[in-house]
Length: 56
Image 1 (tube, rainbow, N blue to C red):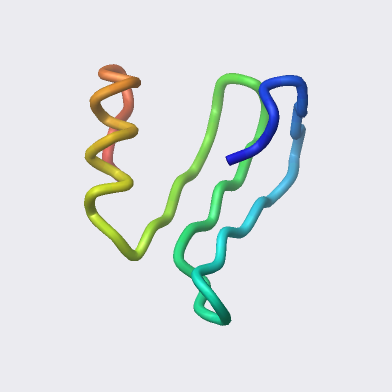
Image 2: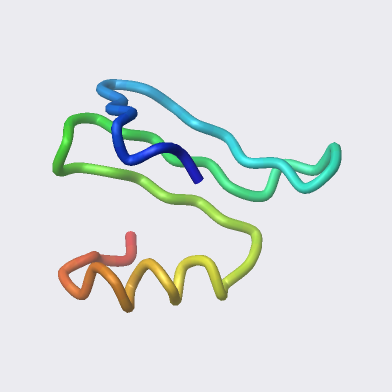
């Protein structure tokens, strides 16, 4: 997680569990994100909070 005051534009953030890459967030602008996660629970939680999200 990042601070709510951090804004990323045209950026990529990566999350690790130890040495293993488990999450990649790519932000194109403040309204368009690409989320890739190893754990389906992460994606389910995002779908819950953002019901307009679409699977690609």
